[in-house]
Image 1: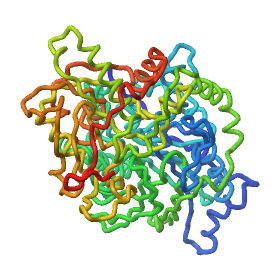
Image 2: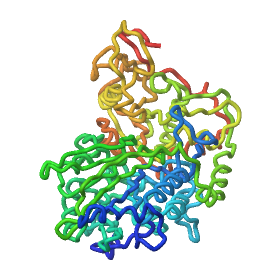
Image 3: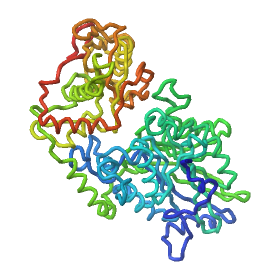
Image 4: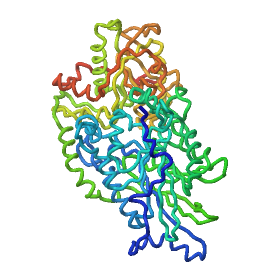
Length: 602
């Protein structure tokens, strides 16, 4: 069965909340938008604004479900759609609602316990199931379109399709193709009409592009169902079509960073962070709303190689912390509107209060999730923290490896691989994770494992594990043996995120940070003896890593011995429930450490 909705191809859709006629009695800003025509004689001008968000990741409210309190960070950012709604309302009042559009660049329905709850605990896919809180809020705010993010696929296509059905705006993905027909599985674009005082509509096309990495990261959900070709290739196909259909302005909403880099090596022939390449290589684009990289880039210009035209890009951080404003001025020339100027900036959501209309409509959902995450599931003998996990072997990461290894051992019992030693891979997903002493709740465990990863078992050799650890050790900055050590500067976290530094439980080893990358792993031992490169091991590993995420060597091509469809987070919650008590003395051990010329750093 084809997955796409073909009736949308080639359609032109009138704008909803963001477009319409300038009516009598309209706000002054609306009338002013077209008044330049009179001031400039016969020259007709029009100004409008396209607002953009990205990487909302289930943040509807300014609330942290892992700490069970209002969100805050060291920079005092705020998050959530309720904050964004206040900013959007301000911009609409200033510019005139009919002179604005609102779009998003993806990763909407994964990331918080709110989004998890309505995908797994009280799923929107159930018969007579609830409306997803993100759909409810975005509908109320009046989004015009949203691109698909890679995390939209984490819960499977049925959940995504139900979310799509619940949205009053289209989910766009020109490079998300039906595997059988090779036609778009989602709507590729939307054409919005902005009515001007002179009576000639400005036609604004929004083209949605998503990340090719979905084929790797969510292979289990999309293989054989959808394919995800490169952004540049599909933009080159669609932008000329949109221009031929009469688009005066073309905006790309791209769930893809602008750096031109990829995390998957040669596993895919496409670029992960391709937004800048799209601007550079594909003529006919006026602006790109950038997502995926979780960066704040208010305004960035790329010169198109073919036309020499400047294309404006903007990325408004993550989680609703910022709102991008693309400001356009168009002039009527030779029978069409032409962009004369385009710029961008971002607004900070910590400067405004939440929109009570949005927070109020989500009160019931919010209370349900708060009650869920605060369920007590066991006790813990000693508090464990991840604050030092990026550079020290700490018990809280050992807990992940202990549970994963135990789960895989049980799964392989009675098979031909039952006698092989089981090792486990884990990373620090949040430096703020804490499992307190005393009572342990769902949110305590969930805060340690913030992603929807599932567990696999892969067959690895000693040599492969050695290469795996050496690759992981690239995370550290080379630090001379006699240089002072600042933990904040010891890791390469600006370029390699914490979640791409893996430790392997079950082996003991040193990482010599005084040595150059590629020759850092030393004293690599298993069971008290030097690791045998030819020996076989089972590696308990999350599906992101097993699918090639982070481009770690060996694991993606290793034989899969077992896989589970349950999130690792749920496996951990179940383990704590069944165990009743967490005792770090049962699993905590210092198996790895940082050294310089053999001397421990700490």
